[in-house]
Length: 372
Image 1 (cartoon, helix red, strand yellow):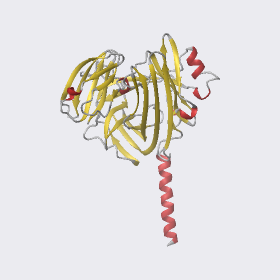
Image 2 (cartoon, one colour):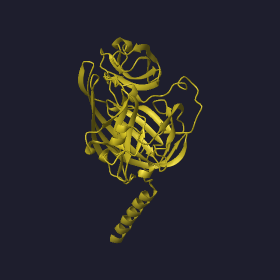
Image 3 (tube, one colour):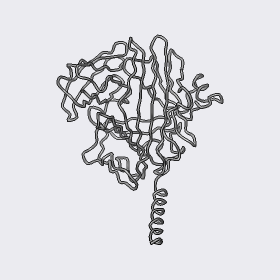
Image 4 (cartoon, one colour):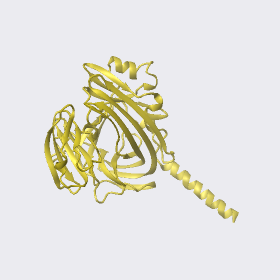
């Protein structure tokens, strides 16, 4: 009997070793570098009916998302730290310390409705080390000067991945905090809790091809405080989850599916995947797709009887549909002091999840709003 148990124990060890050997391992070498220009496709929010469920996890999985259809494309560009005096001092000098950045990317600062920052050429700065890949700050041009924004401390930077990352990695978390105070404009701060859990590995198929990948599920809990335009408020944003499939050598996830927590239900909000150039036909083909953060909305969930506030600069056309594609309304709005409003009666008696497409001169952003 002891010999029998010994054989079972050896079999379990052998199986564990096989998993460890087969699961991809992600390290610093697999993160973005300053010369990267990586094409990505966006699919419509939601998943094809025959797509595998997001709950499919564990070792040696097979995920077939080959049915995704691109509605638009962008190029993720990464550069060295721009040669601006304050950027160099803050992110690229021997005095930078914990704020030292290895790569930068044109990214908007996450701004809630009610606050418009008078900046151009926004950037987000990252550091890839042997230990982790983290966000170390933001930046933008204000009145002709490139101005950096850093986190409160090294202990409060946003750690996106810890290395080495594989199916054997334990769950990890980080808490981050940054604040922006621009005289005459307003104040913004964000506290974030990020929890990463590697829950699967296997073969992933998308329109880009088939790759062996490891999946990381990220839970994001954000709390924003703002003071602008007569508003002094703090609010907790809906919980987001990002399902990210990573593989060595690609530098960005092969596939990212982002969901929002709506009550007890997860609703798919964004689908993005690595891709080759595609000629895309249809109404979205001529519109640059903007990140959801470029069209912040509040409150969300939206109580019946409350107006929906949108953080915008200038005019926009807002089209709302339900999840079955039925039109709820289409309105032209004009922002004043960085905020536009959709009146409560625009939704009529509708209750549930609405899909809002915000078309501006800069491009189109798609958001989901829960009407209570």
